Amino acid sequence: MAVAFKFRLEASLRFAEQRMESAQGVLSQELRVLRSVQKEYDKETAVLENALISQRDEATREPRNLNTWKLFIDALKEKLRVIAERVSFQEAVVAECREAVKVCRIEVEKYKRLKEKKWKEFLAEEQKKEQAILDEIGQRSGLN
Image 1: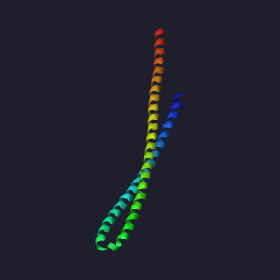
Image 2 (image 1 turned 90 degrees about the horizontal axis):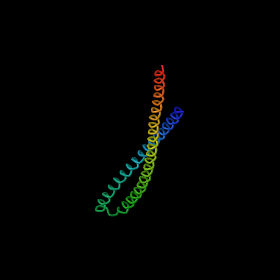
Image 3 (image 1 turned 30 degrees about the vertical axis):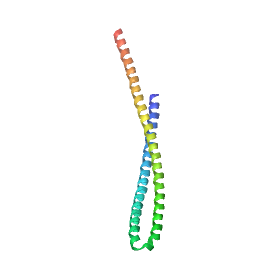
Image 4 (image 1 turned 135 degrees about the vertical axis):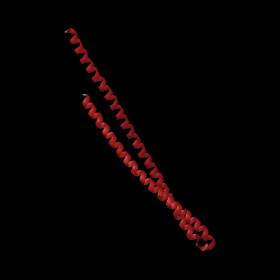
């Protein structure tokens, strides 16, 4: 019976570890997506800053082009807003993935502790059996 229980426990532990590895892989992938979206946001922010500087410089030289600059900057701001929404969404996805990894890690630890506890119980049971055998041998040799 202990062997069947041990097999089920080890199988459950392996499945929990596989789920955790899978969840960690998904988390890693989502973190890469988040980093790329953040890089895109940083790049567009730099473009906007350069456009604002260029607009300011252009205002002193060619005031007629200010409307074009305003339209361009407004388009950049809208693009940044959309990218910021993507960043926020991706951060939420990453948070969910982290929570999934945390749950899997707890499950793995639970199975590891249970396996350790059952192993200790098994050893104690084996020691009791061995002690009973030794006691029986001692009683038999005392009778002779």
